[in-house]
Amino acid sequence: MQLESIPIELKSETTINPLFLTGYKRECKRILSELQKASSPEDLRAWLTKALPVASTRDGNSASIPKEQWPSWINSIQSRYPFIGASVIFSNTSTNARFVWGSGRGLCGYDVNLSTNRPSLSETDFFILEWVPGIYAWHSRNDH
Image (cartoon, rainbow, N blue to C red):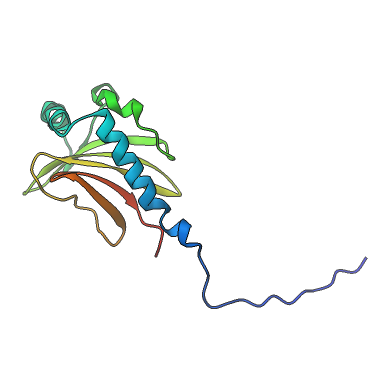
């Protein structure tokens, strides 16, 4: 049996389904909605204040939060990705907790800041939604 070669024409531009492009936005809105059902801004900031002594053993400008210190609402959040962990990030201008779910297909999560600062994530690489000033849901972009 002889195999035929079939010519394939490659296009210089790839067409992407617009629904795929907005999938990360829908997922970000969905996980923000889950957080709003599971907790409140006051409870999130109270948890972060309690977590700071645990995080005081930090190395550099961030510290992982041990699993036993994670807030109880973590278990109620349904994400398309597995939960990776929680950390506290310290800078000269703010202290925030970051909760991250992710895989090789993307990252999503929450930033909870004691102040009203936005996350230190690049808006070029992440779609960011504000719940209240200082508390944000985010998702990695897949449209570039």
